[in-house]
Image (cartoon, rainbow, N blue to C red; front, side, top):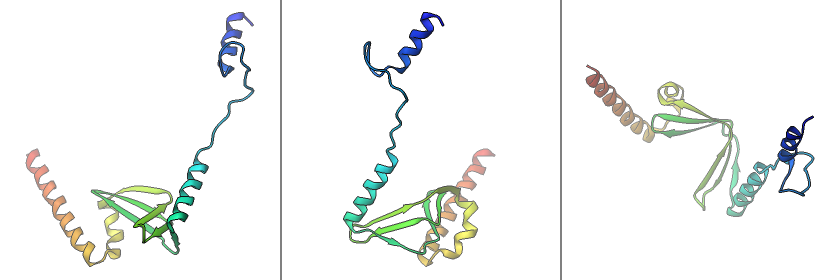
Length: 131
């Protein structure tokens, strides 16, 4: 082994400058568990309770729907805080609309009609600009 290669290898494992100890293995810090514990302690402090038996949560954001299947939902009514945790899926509104239309109440149905009118106007404007 030549001297240059040995110096290069030695430089990559030193934690400080010349004369410091070499580390045996690279340490990996896990912060996700501490973040989760901190969030759970904060939720406990504000009095959030787990809401059982929720199968699906849909969050509407313009033309995208963020869908959680079998999420863990916690709520604190006094603090006006809702926490939805789980694996999200981003879906287009047009794709998911037939599946969730029966879940919408009368208030949301009006909002859905307004949204459909906006989409229709945008489609007409796009066709006009393309022609």
